[in-house]
Amino acid sequence: MALDMDKIKKLPKQQKLALLACASVLLLVAYWFAMFDAKRQDLNASNDKLGQLQVQLAENRTLAADLPRFENELKRLNAELTEALMQLPNDKELPVLLTDITTLGKNAGLEFKSFIPQPEVKKGFYAEVPISIVLNGGYHDLAKFFDELSRLNRIVNVQSFSVDNVEVSPNAVMLTISGVATTFRFVNDAELAADEAAAAAAAGA
Image (cartoon, rainbow, N blue to C red; front, side, top):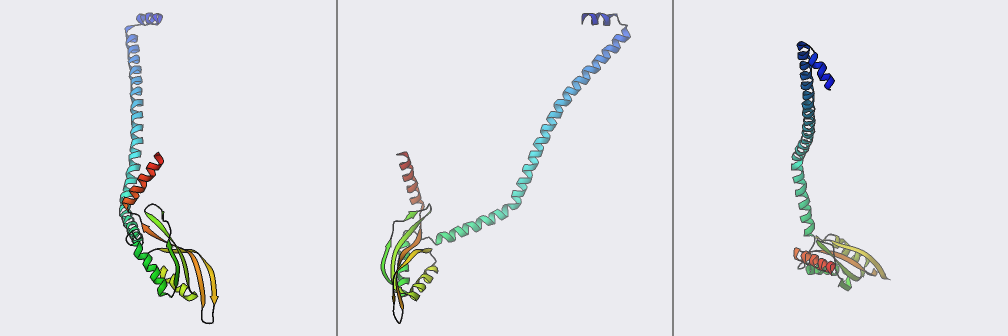
């Protein structure tokens, strides 16, 4: 380095000026490239951010365009839920529903040998209420009773019925059947809160 500086000192003034000019240009070029690279990185980052914002904007525009459809779908689902809940009696309505079931059977000409509600099974906002039933009556009377059950505005599922006795006479076929009819009731908010508190207490015990 010292040798180079000595050589430079011995150069004519014009060559020294030319060498200084070249060094200045090289420094300016290096500085420019350094600044350009930093700006290029900033530009790339800005372009990436812009791309993300454009995608988000497109998604938001799509959601905004679909908002009326979502609102209509929500209204429809709420209406269906309201209609479904109307088919679930509450505690006060349940005895009336059970009376309606027995009345339908008697009007169809059936004799209730047994009609015993079983312990209910809670399923969140509703509870299953199984009813053990033993009926005696004619074949057509039983068919009429089950048809009338299906027409109730409350949900009553008839399942697991079996024929225990068949008596055939010249005028009719008499049957004795037994099984389970399941209806449902609405569980109110107070019950739900009490059930959740009981579950939490049981889990912490």
